[in-house]
Length: 107
Image 1 (tube, rainbow, N blue to C red):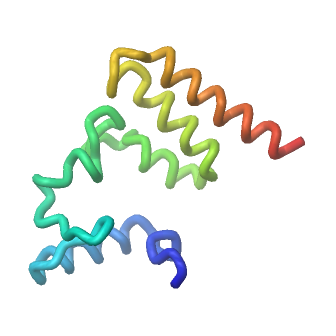
Image 2 (tube, helix red, strand yellow; image 1 turned 180 degrees about the vertical axis):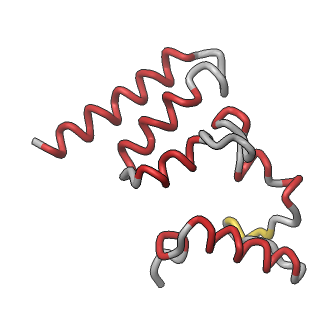
């Protein structure tokens, strides 16, 4: 079975989640249903990535710019540097690793 999430736009994915929640289901992650939006904020829209209401939330920027895995992760680690943990240097080193990886793929 193909990856359903990759074949859908963000809007389609969110709409599917709303319909499943309204039907009493919820979106399934690793076999467990997530019951409502309040319980999944740290899963879907963590504050250290900007939060749901932030137009610059990391995932929104990554999707809008159409970034691949490596560059998307670089943006993710840059956007959360020093916010998820106090170790901003580690987050920036991770971003650097992904940027170097993307550069090597282009060579």
